Length: 324
Ligand code: AHR
Image (cartoon, rainbow, N blue to C red; front, side, top):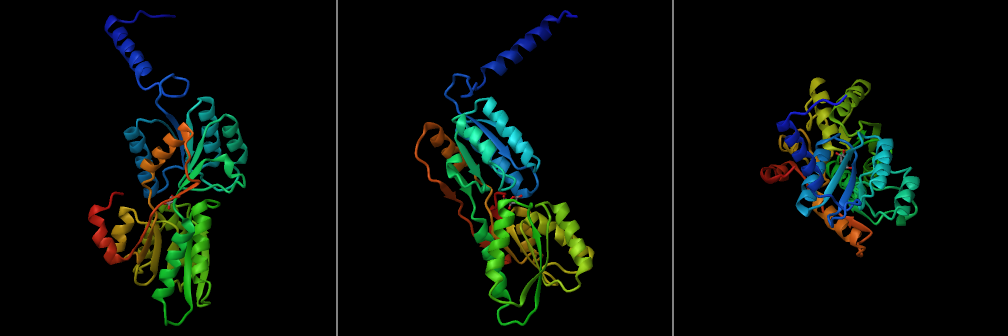
C-alpha cells in the first residue's frame, strides 16, 4: 500500500534521483563520452594491495574515468563473476589483477567477443592466446626473486654452509608466488650450501605469515634465513620469531618483497635485512593505457614497472618520502 510522502521528503528524494541520473552517466550506454572502466581487484590482503587500490581509485578520478570497482576477496570465481557483470553493463574497458595465473581463457574470450579491451594489471595470466588482452602492466616478479637470491649469495660469500632457508610463498598459483620462487631458486642454485628446508604458502597475509612461521620454528631448530614473498608475511613472521625468543634480522636473516612503509620501517630497525621493491602505484599509467585502448590506439603488449632494492641504510634514507 502506498503511503503519502511528506512534501519536504519528496523534494529530497527528487534531488537524490536527479543527482544520480545527472552525474557522469558514462560510456556504458549512457551516451556521454566519459569512459567507464570495470576493475576487478584481488582483495585487500596486504599493505601493497591497499596502496594499489588507492592508486587506481585516485588515478581514475583524476583522469575523469568512471570506475566500477569490485573486490574479489582473493577468489578467482568472484573475479570471473565481476568480469561477466562488467560485460553485461557494457563497460568501455576491463582491467583486472588476476588472483591466479590459470583458468582465464573462457571468460576472456567472452570479453573479446563483446569487443571490450582488457588490460592486465599487476599480475599476468598464462593464456597462450595473447590477443585475449591488450596489454599487461606490472612488475617483473622473477627479477624480484632473483635480486633477493643474489643478495643472499653475496651475504654468505666465503662463509661455510649449510644455510638453511625457509620460504613463505604468496597465494598458491599466483604469478608473484610462482615467479618469485623461481627467481630466488635460480639465484641460489649454483651453490649447494643454500638449502630450502621448508616452503609453504602464507597467502600474502600477515596473519598467515605468522601462523606458518610458528609452525616452521616448531619443526626446525636450525633456521638461518627467511625468504618471504611479501612484506606482510615477513612482518607476521617477525612476530612469530620474537614470540619464540629469537631476534629477527640477527638470529634469522629476513628477505622480503614490496617495500611498503611498514616493511621499510622494519628494515630500518634491523628486523628485516633486505627488501626487493614491487611498486603498487600503477594507477596513472593504467588510466593512460585505458584511454588509448578505448580509442583503439596502439599500446605496447607489456609495460614494465621500474623498481629498486633496499638495504637498512637505504630504507632509513627513503622512509621520510615513502608514499605507501
Ligand atoms: O601481486 C603483487 C603482490 O600481491 C604483492 O607483492 C603482495 O603484497 C600482494 O598481495
